[in-house]
Length: 161
Image (cartoon, rainbow, N blue to C red; front, side, top):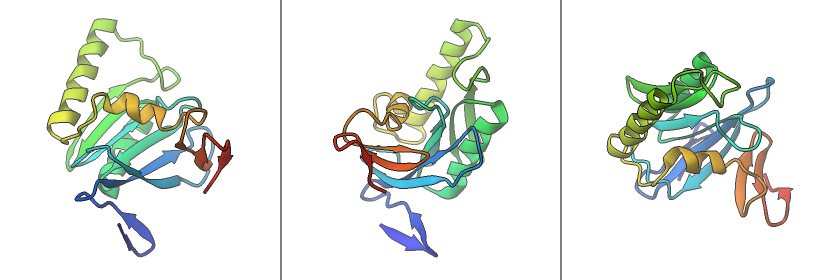
């Protein structure tokens, strides 16, 4: 991987991407780390469904797409989003960032379309991109996870960075 002015630049060839967590409840520094084996080739994905604190978690190939996906979630007051260049798609979850008042069949169709777009357009190899993303923030399962406080080792049960 490389740094540009102190900022991590994703390494698409070797599948090392930036992962961040943004605290949804108070102003705090953004936690950043590197994630491997997402298979994401373009753009960024983000979610406010991030166990257990439900902060915003995002993975991206570049900072511009990360910002676009995250800002879409902030605007909708929660949801799952994906961005690539000028394209940004979101399934809004404005009830606590986890739920919606939209009909279940309608929201399921929107989610399926977003999931398919991430797999086809952004070339993400994960079977369940947004489910995987949400569990990267669940600190109690091994091994390394990320929260708004930084990287956490679920086996040693301590922050490592």
